[in-house]
Image 1: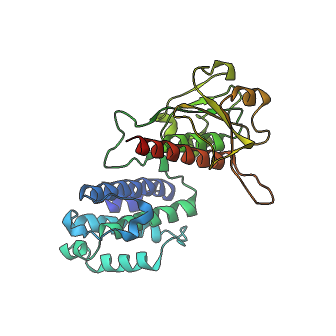
Image 2: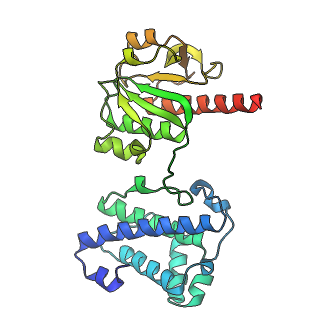
Length: 302
């Protein structure tokens, strides 16, 4: 770890970039520590987790260092920290009081430190525009597995999606719900575009993908389309293996794509004035429904 006095002497821009990396590293470490104690961590329900004292693993000097880098951020004149909550400030006061002592770790929890790291990092990013490497977060219990878990035969074909952001979103959703692979038409934006990589949160590197024409899709597997005018999603019988075709943001699926979708067409019922949602959101809804259908079918078969 770079000493605090050296951090303080760095030019402001360089110091802020290093602080973002340091805070990101601390978040990873705290995630890993909580998981190592047998807690199945989900950041969305961290408030419901039993509090784990930092004293179980961290030293007083660890907590002091985290206090120091947090204060370097908050004392930066360029930083306005709306993300720092009263609970964070109370924690910083407690940490300052027992700085460098054993009581510093006994008085705080790992969960509180994790929230502090996250909030301070976001305050720094918000004020400076330094982009955090969110996609670098990998679950600390498993790291990057040697073999990725997926649902065999579950594939998405993205036809002419022009927005890199939406392409990245498709990759992230496909990976999250266990699609085996992603196929892209020649007219799709590149998943290696910076905006696609950012919205994909690193998933482009985890899930196999390739470009191909519609005609190259195997005739031996079911192909269905996500498009208006089809069977409502709650009534649709998803294939156990198959390809879902999703279309462009403006034009939807081509007539050729609809003709190729011989298994059928699935639609998401909507009641709003626009009756339209982003292709990434629509794909997320259908992937959740497909995964749920497969899980229910598996349970019934047991």
